Image (cartoon, rainbow, N blue to C red; front, top):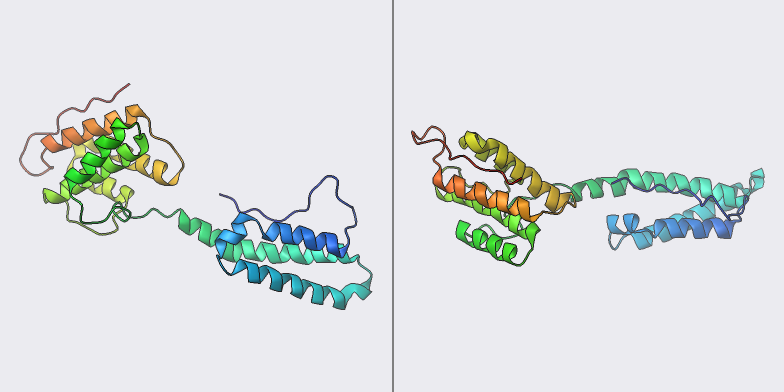
Length: 226
């Protein structure tokens, strides 16, 4: 997501705005959600202080002959640029950082709990929840079978890498599921019924399989819905 940088409207705007018009533009810009969300409880005070500072600075340099509105706009654009770089962008990027698979559901739930949630969600047509809960069930099952060591904060990407290493015959499907999890939880994508059927088949296949190096048969073939 790109941070919006202030620019005055291009149409129906005075070529030479006065100080009041410029101040209104700055207030409108700094009231946008990008800035308000970046510092909850702080931005309202910061905006007022920025405008006070600009007015004081402007009063000291008006004598050089430049129109007050243009000077205020130039200074305001510089301040907003600094805010965007130092405050807004880091916070927006932090929001996109994937959380651990169980951070939102609690680490004490067993695989059957997450599998039941997945099936209930699928029955209700909630494909997003059905898919994400199925991956949680798959990872929890691997931990309960002592195939993977439980590790707090493990992300979907990390779970996919670990599971695909111990179930190499299903690596393609496991990595696909871990990517779909992130796309749905953090990328705004939506799961489809076919995705949920595919994850359920993967889960069933992994339940029948033995991990690599255990001296057991390879993972049964997993059909991918067309």
